[in-house]
Length: 157
Image 1: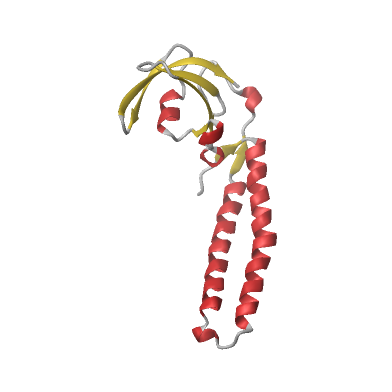
Image 2: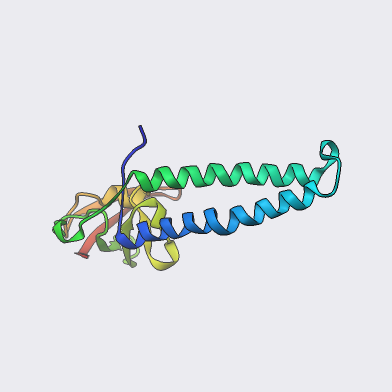
């Protein structure tokens, strides 16, 4: 049984859009490539045909995985979340205790993570350390550079 994963409405819509793109546009492109390669003659020694068939197989696997992901997706009702503690979809402002650097991160499902926009996966080491904690708590994160201590300054939506 596949695991249920939680998404924001926006995150689930992104998955559905990607699936539609793969099923309509990408499938048609690969079908055209296969037809073009088939028209070139002997299929037993046709590398173009083999490559197109392999691409088709990979595309179908990706489509199947996306369909399963969407089928097992649940939209998280953000209005019912308790923001006194760090949870998924919390926006958390933290301070590195050693160098006083402050950072703000949004904790999101792995599929929505984007470090450039400050969205980190709930499966990341920092998020795992923060989950369930409250403002004023300190957490330690085991990073490649060693253990880093952070203080939670603020939790918002």
